[in-house]
Image (cartoon, rainbow, N blue to C red; front, side):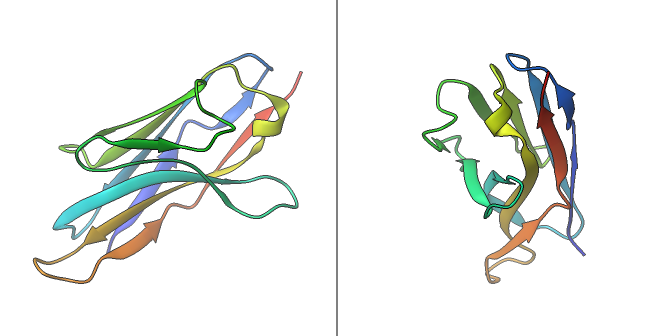
Amino acid sequence: QVQLVESGGGLVQPGGSLRLSCSASGRIFSIYVMGWYRQPPGKQRELVASITSGGTANYADSVKGRFTISRDNAKKTVYLQMNSLKPEDTAVYYCNADLIVTFGGRVTRYWGQGTQVTVSS
């Protein structure tokens, strides 16, 4: 059974910073892309950032220059450093991982349970 566990959410003032972490555990052969999505209140889930196993990152336009995604392959962990936070960044943040559990297996996307980020004065 594969699990993704997120941590690091909370309440922060506008202009502040937070760092989210997400660690994968369980029967995992290889992790390809890891990423972060968010779902603001009353809106659909949207991509924030993603990163390949080789370190190639992709960002939503709304967070470019403010957020940085990184990963530690040995620890099966992905991070999201969020700086210059704005009220519109308020959302539940979900991590995901595209992985295989056995050699030659089907790539499957797994999701974390979500962590709340609230940006407010």
